[in-house]
Image (cartoon, rainbow, N blue to C red; front, side):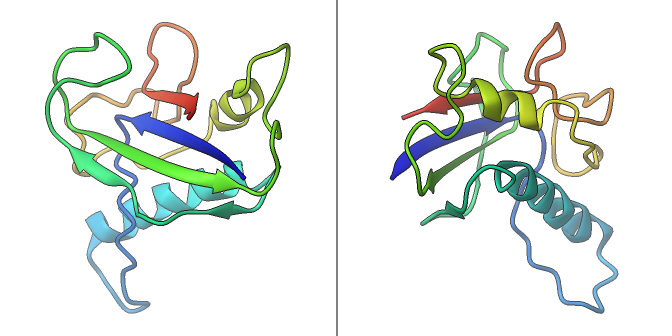
Length: 130
């Protein structure tokens, strides 16, 4: 199995609200998590041992200052499923880029536009093979 890590400024808490829940924060968090999962799942089945972890402080992948961020590690069934031009995560970054998200949850960074940004000057999500 191949292992990957996503670090994002987008609230991807796996909150699992009840069907009749009216908690807009939990519903939005789960929707964002589902969007990430579906984008990743376009190329591979996904497994994980731990839900995304909410962290405070300096973002470990970029000198982006201090912000609330989420770290999620997951496995895919095949090696090199996201490989393009010798970059082991290029296709994953492409698949995630532009996916719409719900921005005003527990994130501290401005998520404008309300979408995953893996490239350009407003990056809010970083992907690595580990």
